[in-house]
Length: 166
Image 1 (cartoon, helix red, strand yellow):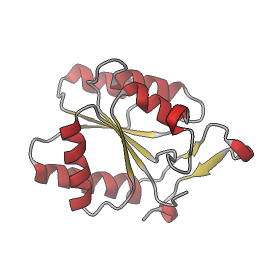
Image 2: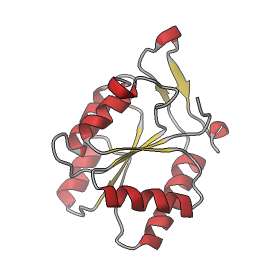
Image 3: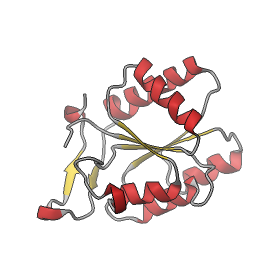
């Protein structure tokens, strides 16, 4: 398994996924970025089920970048689910949404979001946000201990700290 902290991007827009991926590259964020397209897929990834059962290939993320407005299981439901999971409730979740509605911001924080960022329309601003996310959440912020769901071999958890980054 990679020793780098992994980002999980939960984003239904292929254009936004491509934009964020390119912005991370331009910002020189070298950490792996795994992307899923639906809230249901995010739940599978985070629970390590279905096609995401192999934690070597799909490691538990250090940070979830979460869109809110998705069909089916939306970002609020994903956030609510994460905070109800004993092994994931400390997982850092950064909402990355095009919504600037105060009710969305408030609800996201009430459900346990660690941060709420509004998606910029300009690519260079996306690069700046990518640098800020990496700089703050990976380098400056102390990560909580996040336990993985039980896996083969009895491994209970992994600490994500700054020494394991980049």
